[in-house]
Image 1 (cartoon, rainbow, N blue to C red):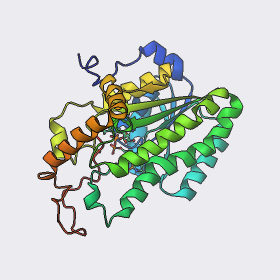
Image 2: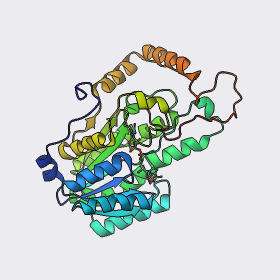
Image 3: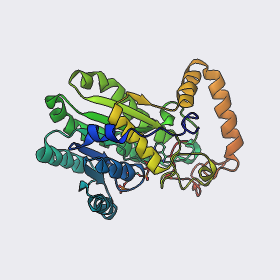
Image 4: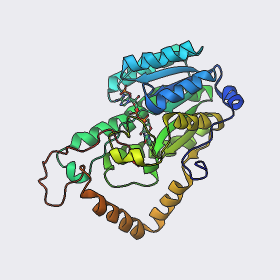
Length: 302
Ligand SMILES: NC(=O)c1ccc[n+]([C@@H]2O[C@H](COP(=O)([O-])OP(=O)(O)OC[C@H]3O[C@@H](n4cnc5c(N)ncnc54)[C@H](OP(=O)(O)O)[C@@H]3O)[C@@H](O)[C@H]2O)c1
């Protein structure tokens, strides 16, 4: 039922997943918690050697220890994707140690829920989201792709959001950064496919993780668990579709682009209806530099 409603993807057959990843090297960014950690556990359980990337060493080591206790193999690579030098060193280290990795799951992400009115004095929101969601992941891939293309194999999985189909109020910084990476991947996908490297984008709806937790009303909305999202990542790695997006999100995207005035009317009505109680958005006339007490720096686009 939830699958029919586009709220969850069914996991791949375990045999198919094992055939796809057993003995393969899978690098996962954002593997310290949430979707990335859950996907790392599932992939390692199916026989992949997982490379765990994020900033929080303790959480990466915890994930790695859990995997090893279950008989899998994992290695921790602490790195901040917003740090150009660290990303460059990471790509060089991985290439020196493994040559070409088989799968890269580009999952690390930063979300900010804040209206543009609350962002007038916060250009750093846009810098941070573009660093983590776009520039860092691209730089990492620029370092990893030469070996993958030379070997004529590999797969990139982009963990994205339905905001790629349906940009919505309050999420300008997040949506623009996720959209930039999505556009980059769509542009390079034919070049990579020509050299044997496949690409997949997953447009997740709400997933109940630390990222969505700061927005209280999301707790009452239907969403996926991190384990269900990890199943979707495993499905992507197994069957390599170009795009996984809920049917209603794709449909909404088509409506939004073909009936722009309808889309604008609906979203403006939504913003007007929600801004009065949304702490992230001030009422008109509020002072531009006012603090944004309820802004949810961790919240994902719905
Ligand atoms: N949750 C949702 O509703 C939802 C919906 C659609 C799409 N998504 C996407 O799903 C992906 C995973 O999100 P999640 O829900 O699992 O969130 P999460 O629990 O907050 O996990 C985010 C991961 O990204 C890592 N990360 C953040 N900043 C980083 C940086 N500068 N350098 C390296 N790693 C960094 C974090 O690790 P450290 O803090 O240890 O660095 C963490 O492992 C994101 O790309 C998000 O945009 C989520």
